[in-house]
Length: 81
View: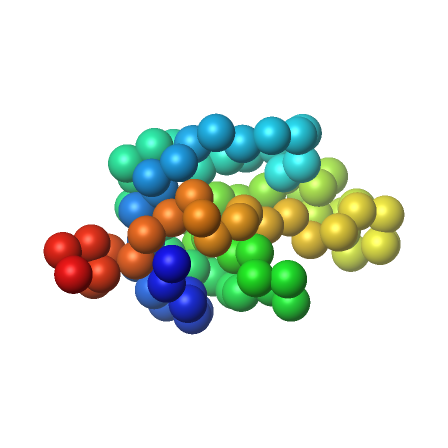
């Protein structure tokens, strides 16, 4: 599994997400850009914007910042390695 960093282009290779948070999920075989790598290794994506309500709940500390586990993605530059 790749160690992602900000700006990496990734392909979603696993679209089986459990739970209800975050609400918006990446789509299988779609390309995304890593926005941030969170403290637990989860990533946020530039192309997925959360609703104003979700953002407000994160800012007030009611909910943790939503992210996706890295095993859902493969770095595009490493697909043919």
